[in-house]
Image (tube, rainbow over all chains, first blue to last red; front, side):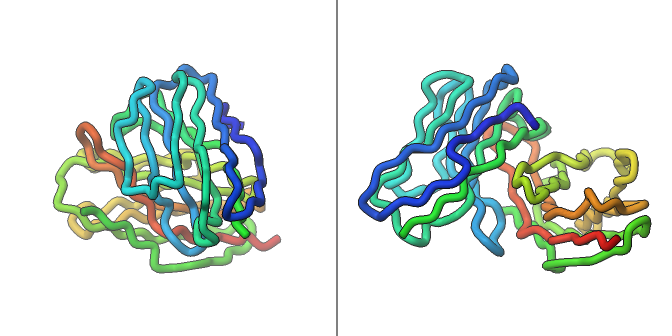
Length: 114
Length: 115
């Protein structure tokens, strides 16, 4: 257990649904991240929040909408997704958003879009 | 842009033996950090070992050690005395020093430890 909790663990949704992924950390970290992990592809960084401010949006389609209400919580709101969006979505946190900081990951949400 | 290449999709090793996982990277940066992360079936990525590029000494963490060859841009992970719990996907990652950098991962390698 790394101290980063993600819910739900599994999610199946239709292309017209709206759902949200939740990430929570109580490690006192100031930076939080969303990554997408697809089969046989490198992890793709989606969003970075530092001190609750979005500092990175890695050309992610607008059907993915992040929200960081405080330094302990991070959400990823999903709407009108496509089947190719099916993947494992990993949340991570670090003390600061600097290059030598260790990332602490959650167990991910396995998303299937039908 | 940086790239990280893990050319071996999967490997297998006998319990108690030693295995080496390969990783190469491409960058024009001189100062950066390299990581190996482990992702067991529980899916939770865990940092295994970290190497600073400015350090010539190879990093070591118990049974895990790296062979860092900066000129060759190579960063392999050696696992000694392999254990069943080492079965997992292993990801090599690169992080340039400086503000607003981002971590670049390789595709990963699946390691199976046989009893």
